[in-house]
Structure formats: structure tokens, C-alpha cells
Image (cartoon, rainbow, N blue to C red):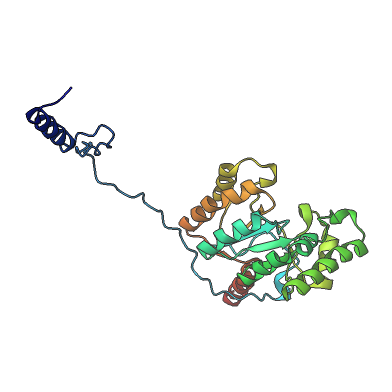
Length: 278
């Protein structure tokens, strides 16, 4: 069919207008730009971070005289000094956690270490000493010394003393018998031959029974007095979990942490002072 020139012009114009109108069904639609309403509320307040209390640096001597005596469970009771002690380590995971807690609070503790564990973890033992803590002799195998001969006791103490010295370069000043088990005659022999006073304790939370961190903390806070030697074990993870609240609670009560040797030196000084006054 023949299309007239006029009709052809009208059809061409219609197609041109349709193509320029921008109505392309395949063209992506622009994103929504309508504002989204939000609920109004209070300004953000960051959580409060409780500051960690710090033990003041205590400038007490570490050397105590032999006249201090054979056995001790506490220091002088006229001053708020206490000694925190940890037995049976070092432990590869618990002891580093504990050392971090002590360092954050400027607390120096005394670690009664097992010789076998010192041999297993020499770098950790060196860290204990490097951070200003005291090392004590707690035998090689955690043996009940009451059941050993004198020579058996010497073997336990000698091996532990040797590994502490070779590992850290320091000599232990005191010893603690495993389970607190030691006859008076044995204590006197050890004091005579090694110069070690036997160190027991005034506060025992019985953490080895794993009563739970809150119970350990409560028992220590309720039982500690001036001069207390506090027993704990870095062998047990729940004990370490209990320590931040324990340390902070004792600091808030006004106690000042020192090592066992410092506690004994202060005890000797107090005894001399009282004898001079008398």
C-alpha cells in the first residue's frame, strides 16, 4: 500500500517524540530519596570504667635476721601490712593472668613454687622474679615432708633451690611445706641448715576445694587482719578469677601488700622497737 507523504511525515514525527520521551522500561529506576524518620532519644552516654585501685609502693627491707624465728603464720599486727602467697605454680595459663592482675595494682606477692613446674616453665618463673615478686621453696614434687626422712627432705629442697637459682639467679629466702605438714624438729633442721623460716598462713580460703570465686573472695576479705599471711593457689583457675575483687576489697580496707620477706623484716623491726621501749 502506498503511504502519502503527509501520513509518512506524521508517523515519523510520532516515533521521534516517543523515543525522546525518556520512558525506557529497561532503564533502572533511581533510588528512593525520601528521608527515613528516626525516633528521638537521649544522647549516648559511654559506660563508666571503674578505676583499678593501686597498692602504694612500700619501701620495707627484704632482709630479715635469723633471730626472727623458725616458723611464722603472720607478721606484726600493729601495721596494716599483709602478704599474699600463691602455691603450687607456676601454671602456664593461670599464673600469667594473675601476674597481669598484680601488675595492674602494683602488688608484690610471694610464690611458693614446685621445682618440677619451674623446670617446665622457666620463662614464666623468670617473669615472676622480673616483675618484683618473691620466690619461695615449696619442694620438688609437693611431697608430704612428714613422711620423708631427713635426707628425703634435703633432696626435695636442694633440687628446688638449685632450679630456682639456675633459672632466675635468685635464692629463695623461705619455704612452705606442702599441706603445711612439717614436724617441729624438721622445721628446726631446715632453719638450721638452709636458713629458711617455715611459712604457714593465717588466712586459708580453702580454694583448693573450688567453692567458687565469690566464696574465695568473701573468706579472704572476712578473715584478713593486720599482719596476715594469706594462702591461695595459682594452680586453680577459679582462684585467679576471684583475685581482682579480693585485691580491690583488701586495698579499700586499707591493707598494704608486701612480700613474705618484707613482712618478716617489718616484724623483726617492730620486735626490736618494742624491746627498746621496754
